Image 1 (cartoon, one colour):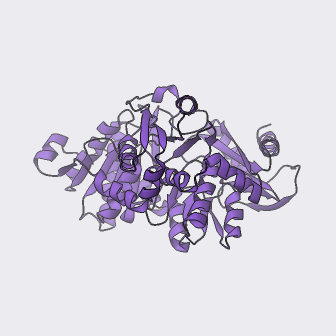
Image 2: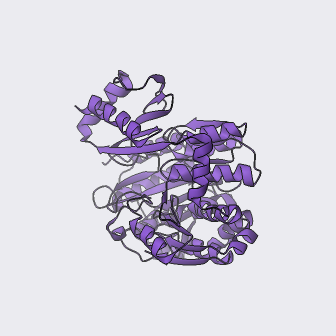
Length: 470
């Protein structure tokens, strides 16, 4: 029987290999067993899905298993971004929610995310227990979907967006957005974020046009992650169309990418710094900020300038949202493009983040590039470089032994000030860091490095690669 594992972003697997009906039903039965074990089988479960191949069908397979066991399910009549499912769990005081998605993974993948009470990402303890329950499951009985509907176990949600959208609109400075009247180009990357973005930006009286809104199982031949490389078409269209802003989201709407009016890609680290700075300096919010171990240290300097602290947590958004609540932080985020803001949901929401970014541009009257130049002048320049290395599974234990068990390190060109093994291996320098960790969703060794220049950051990475792989 296939082993099913939940990483930092849920269970993800290759379609046709491991992401198949049998395994999807085992996951669903495992979730039901977890509900019973926790004495939380008395409320409906909300099920959403993105626009990937097999997502809608898989959502129905999950529903068939839960309804067979007497659980009422709420299911979407259209694809939905992940933050909407989290918000629905929170606003309806549900115990559990499910989204069928593989987020930003390649088109060959699909998966399942599990959310718990208050709309939170399932904790490590919950997913570990779920894995144990799934391991003991063989054949899974199910109730045909149409029959489940006839028996009243399936409730179709025809417009679940209203509360979600109203809550975001209430948090925004709509007057400032209407006064500025931005021209925005939105790239949905063939995902499920188009409808909420259109509603919000039309409400704000912005001119908004769209690209890549059609459903495409291959995501137009690019990775469905809002990176500089994948947003090449958006960049050119923003420049040619003279737009004030280009906005992009991954397939399930929890990762954000920004293109400035000059065609500059505003990376996730820069977005976090800009929004935290804006919320504290311009909106007068008070509080610390939270980042994961692979996210820019510029946040530390910005927080310190306001007399606040930047908290570092492991990779996995559950750690960010948990720490944000614990310390009442203004904002929390990660260098891969996800962020959350105090007073909203307990997870990544690029719908709100994109709207807030547009508000920032409207209120300040500056372009993101102009604001970044000010930040760099005040806090210094921070350049991050990333190198993902795929590996044969047989190599993982050897790499793990070198870095994490024996804790051996190479000779770096700069003096080491600190080493952390909280999540992978992170080496700190006076003006930078390098971190190696295994991906929780793909067979990759992720290496991130930050320094005052790309050359120094690349040198950190090359030193690690040569030491481990040669």
